[in-house]
Structures are given as C-alpha cells and as structure tokens.
Length: 239
Image (cartoon, rainbow, N blue to C red):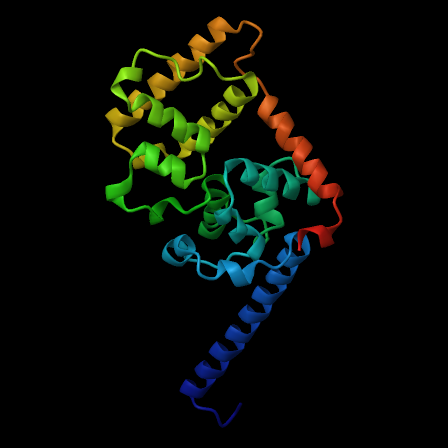
C-alpha cells in the first residue's frame, strides 16, 4: 500500500468492511433458515420493518411480524428450547442476533419488541395510538374483543368474562400482561380506565369461579405443549 494515497486507503478499508458485514448477514440468514426455514422472500416487503427497523434482523426474528399473539409465544418457547435457554431474552442476547456477543443493543431491544408485539411500536402513527387499534395490530384478538365490548355504552355494567372459560381468561391475562409494555403509547386517562376495567372484570370472574387461580398458568401450559409438538416435528414439515 506504499503508493496509495489517503483517499484510496479509506476507500479500500470501507470496501473490506462492507464485504465482512455482508458475510456476517449471510451467516445469520443461514442460521435462521435452519431453525424455521428461509422466510426472507416473503418478509422483504413488511411495512412495519421497512418503516421502523434500524438494524439487520435474521429471517427467523422477522417472521414474528406475521404471527398472532399465541403463535409468537409458541415460537418464543420453541426457540428457547432449541437453544436451551430459560429466558427468551437470553436466546436473543446470545443466539438470535447477528452480533450475539451478550452485549445489549438497540437491535436486540427491537428484536424483543417484535417478538412481543409483532411489530415495532414506533411505526404506529401517533394519530392511531388507540388501545383497541394497537391491540388488534399486535394480534391480541382476545384483548381486542375485550376493548370492543366495553366500547359499547350498554355493556358498561356487564361482564365481558361472564361466559368465558378458564383457558380464555388465562390467555387474556397473558395478552394484557404483555400489552402493558405498550402503555406509554396512550393517554394516561385512557390507559388507567382500561387497566381499571380489566382488573375489575378479572376480579369479578374470580369471585364467581373460586377454583380459578388469579395466577392461573393454563395458557403457559398450552404454549409449552405446542412448542414441544413443533420441536418434535421433522424440520422438513415446516418448509
């Protein structure tokens, strides 16, 4: 490099960096393809990821944007088992990022957000940040139905959960627990009304069903069973 001037050296270094980054991205995509099959072709045009993602994500992580709440929770559990992790956060930190060095980053935070909500929250226009709309965009169908029920004035003194079984209530509680992470999007009075209504409805349900544990883990047990079934299916069945 003796005869190269400064501009040529800088150009050479930038080109080498781009080649190395491209190789790392291909390696990450290959790992994702082995886990769930290569979904990159159908995911390239996802509007949420194009609008809000500031970093590279593997195909397996981008696939969360096409799943409803139950499917996202099953996939989280499946990946935890695949990498022998007790927490999904650890799977993201050490196994599912292009840079899996254990250090935290904006990219890994985005991955967790996508896995929980099915989209990046910053992509939701501020004029559409209504609780019911966001819940439905996140594929939380039970929670969306709960919110729609109480949006009808005649239902204010009724109970949405009155005719629901214990599994439904357990799953609804799981949706609401995850959805709490999006609370910063909403007006405080709207958010507090929603949380208070939800608390009252669950407590009333518990009063009428004394055998229902408030911390019932029926939904969690269902997720674990489904993940176990998926892990036992040969990978060719998922392609």
